[in-house]
Image 1 (tube, rainbow, N blue to C red):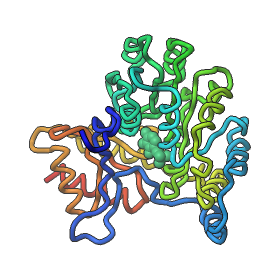
Image 2: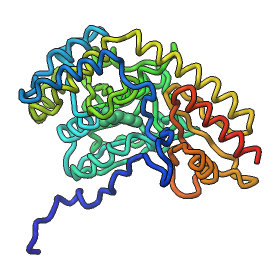
Image 3: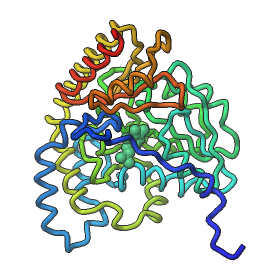
Length: 362
Ligand SMILES: *Cc1c(COP(=O)(O)O)cnc(C)c1O
């Protein structure tokens, strides 16, 4: 053939579909499709961003020193083993690029972040999917699928779109069951929201083990998805490998500055976390009373299962919500009876409850 051919994996990739952000004919809809923070970032982060905006003619700090130190202080970690990325998305791509190649297998739990499938396929690796059970990551299903070709295993904990989490003992059973030469990545995009004693965010495991990595993001509770900034906590040898392929200025100056201010404002984060938990409880109670099943969530979103009978379907509810200027996220394919909705501000959540009450009682 006489034109450039992309690598074999590339054309196997389906394009990423972003959560819907508009409804035709409606100005300022309530967007609850992408698990964004309706409260926005800490005011300190906005201020730091604006200050950094006066230095756009300078390259950012390629060593990411200030942000790494701020994260290390707040989470009590070793700053030398933190790497920041253009969203945790870029970090996941870097780990997959560094550890998986053609002919290797990347093992994912069914619902894991879609981007992981895309990165692994692009590498020419085989993506192996372990089914989930009862809306939970299934440790046995994952362990059963480990082969001598498995190089990387990735789960999201808490998981998306289910909002559930793998408790400490199950997480332990999973990492203990994995061969020591398999890189085990825990995507903790929603970790800051979890308020459960039997949840382990995995950061302490990284200190103890050579094969566990945790990724985190500023896109969710910290309210900075537009700046594309995330971080990972890694064993020393993993830092060394990934630093070799990271582009030196992958994280921009305003993002580094805003994220450092955001992570330091722990009072703001704590307040958002508590408000979120209160809303989750109320939403779950109200929707259950309407006859809906809400998957128990520890995150800033919830997955609703519709009965499917008496014409009460996820699609019908999505249409009704949209007619009320609310954008939910349908999950699964056509005919799937689930909707994922982000916990928003007080008036946004009230609007959802009202619309779903009207829909269910019509
Ligand atoms: C939102 C989300 C992320 C965050 O990705 P960024 O690239 O940091 O914005 C990561 N993993 C999961 C499962 C998510 O839902």
